[in-house]
Image 1 (cartoon, helix red, strand yellow):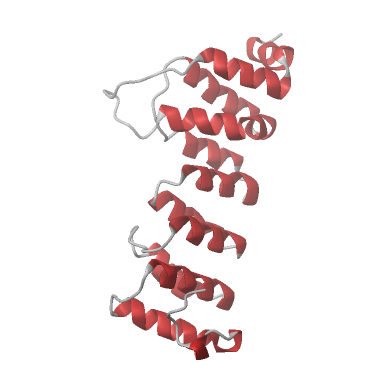
Image 2 (cartoon, helix red, strand yellow):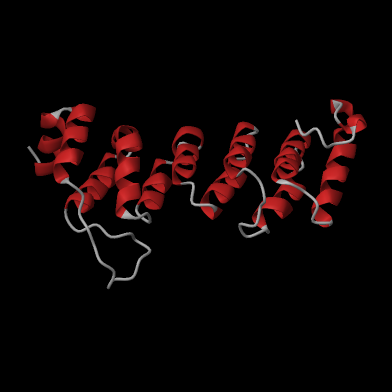
Length: 191
């Protein structure tokens, strides 16, 4: 908790006063990252979606706070879309995917998001979330794995951009650990 706040605002029964105080600090440009994190926490506790929308969604990435903490605050309060917006604005791919996969169970959206990332980020996230994705959306995941081993390029990049392929052996080792060699290879070649 920030020690620079007036003591009368630190009691939970004064959360509305604290919120007003923190908003005033932000309007005058005097707020620190701690103030911003605390304000996000106030909005989520008050279930003030309108203020949260205005603060996160309309700032176009200008939120001045510990962004990972802001994502965790929104996520733990069930504000998944707000957490996704913060994570996307600040390139926190692992948080973005964790929300899509663990909280929203939107595996197709997670794969679509992964397909927009650069090769190294996709590889890291395939290693982290690939087994779950393979279990829930096997066809789409297999397509991504094939692209990674052949001619991967992010889906939102220009055609002339350099393409790459990851080390197929690392993907194959990972896949074998998820489903066993026969299950994946057999399904891939139609055995």
